[in-house]
Length: 267
Image (cartoon, rainbow, N blue to C red; front, top):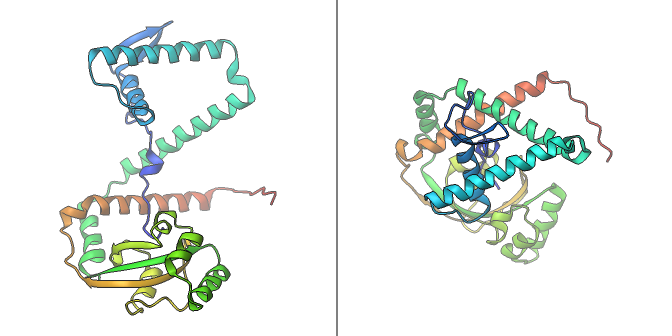
């Protein structure tokens, strides 16, 4: 897709607490505590995997007993030394690295607060100073310029754009719609995509493929019209996420520059 994603996926499942768990103890199993915080985390994860239970005393007891069973099984696994089995060891290592990575992201975001002034500056830049037009377009996204040129030739030979989008486009969310991206404005797409789009007349297809970090695009402009930018309040959350992602991208780039990385690829 051409619309950027956010850092929230990286924080999915991150425990909100930053200190030792001091929430009330709900049960102990061979001396190991199960706390209210453990319960809430378990319920959140459980609700994502199966239909939520009603929030009442009976369900609370059912869920607490599930937690007790989990602790009993984990204790038995440790006693049997199963954590030393290769597959279990690898899975535990992955879990540990995921937890630490999320903790680092959470710490970074907590210590690099985004100010209201920065949000308003981005609002002025992206929405107030941007062209006040919305566009409706469709695209076909492929991995290489050669593939894009071959598809362009098929279009020149009379093939239907929507048919080729469904067959070839790597953007699955728009491919199913014949490449349709719906209505968007300059702030919603990457600069190179936008620069190519505004050179087109209604119905025209980009004469050459357009390169972005996602791949190579063939674009068709379908319609455009003026629009009134949304208020700052209406887009504040989106702008916050955008700046948050930018901060994380910058942090990761700086950390990668300092890291000693060796690739050992076999293909």
